[in-house]
Image (cartoon, rainbow, N blue to C red; front, top):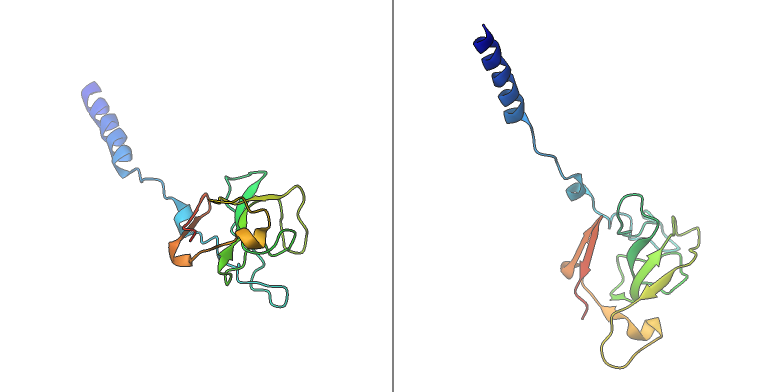
Length: 136
């Protein structure tokens, strides 16, 4: 009797273990670029690709517009002016304590319009937790 109870228990344990499914990575279904094709005259979402960990205080985003402009990232833009640390929840609410950095080579350039670098969406990888782009 003990042997059959033990075998039954062992069968249940292995059945549960065998049917255990792997955890699904739902971030693969998220497109942070959705809603980024907006401007002051026309709203298509008014979002920007905020790259951060869950519940993060600071977000990082590629900046295609000038500093202190509500629309920091526009999908139609051809140049990146920098990578902005932001707290901005919406383009209608201005940002605070934000700054932008940009990797440069050669002579140091301070004006963001002069240091802007061309980019293509073909060479851009955007995930909720990761951003990568080739700067030309």
